Image 1 (cartoon, rainbow, N blue to C red):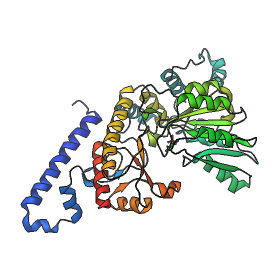
Image 2 (image 1 turned 90 degrees about the vertical axis):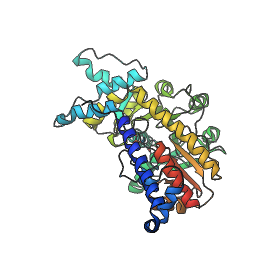
Image 3 (image 1 turned 45 degrees about the vertical axis):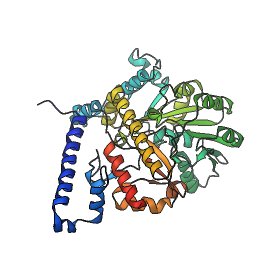
Image 4 (image 1 turned 180 degrees about the vertical axis):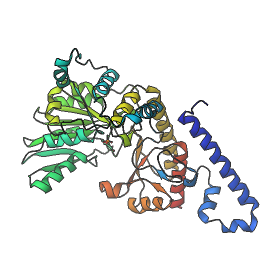
Length: 417
Ligand SMILES: Cc1ncc(COP(=O)(O)O)c(C=O)c1O
């Protein structure tokens, strides 16, 4: 029998779910007194249109759980990645072939000319000339930029609210080693976008690192390529700049230019990329940084010398990066989902800001923790802006599959009523 593509399995699965929901409603209407034993939640589910959490069986989660808080890709990984893992599963008793093939595949994907591997004696020199560093998720790029820029009296600049992992690397060291490290959170502008002018003004002689997440997390906004380039050009070269492009595959504008060449051309800039989001491989832990070989050699000091990458993640990433169809499919699902959710949120009286990522930042005009917990009781998990970012009335919602989005809306309507 021909193996089923995961999308075919999904269609079959959804058809089964539609049938079971229809049966439920039929039984409910015909059930008379028997229907009295059905909970108010089930009745509301039957009367409102769309799916409910119990209808949803997402990839990688328990049936009935709607997990829209972690900005993961609900479509799962590329089938090519799954096939590569299956093919190599029985070889994990070996260390594997390292990361050089993956680095070449990444180079080809970004059209970066890499130094040739022309013989074993030059091999380690070629490695040292590579502008790509592969890591277990992109987090090690964020962390090593933070550790490399750490020194007594130094300051880091990061947006507020923002993705604070690099700052957290500093606070850990500060608490453990008693270093004097200052983190300056610079507020976003009124459109929830990085205020690059304000960030520039905050730079002083002690500033050793600036972190820019573009598209931004948690607000899903972008800065223009020109603004980013001008900003990088104006920052003094002693300041390390992290350009975190974890969500770059979801930018709405197809002509939007990424920062790869900025990373290649500036010795103080690292561009971080991940297989966790667009590629649907968060659990595989593969990411990479694009930067000058000189900066790579500075960051490598903070990494284990022996290859820390899992063999299966490496082969999966190598297979996934060529699957442009999967990325395109994921992007389309996210954009359709955003269109759907934006209308539903507006109907609820909220004003979602346009998203350039696979998540939406929504002012829900009420306590975010109470709201998130109420959704949790209905098996829907979102990200609570009050707890995570001290934004009392904001939540971050990952765009899911159509079923997940409908179930989320059902649960939100339920909570709001
Ligand atoms: C902006 C941003 N950067 C980096 C990461 C780290 O992801 P990973 O280590 O899985 O690549 C995340 C994870 O959520 C993120 O949101």
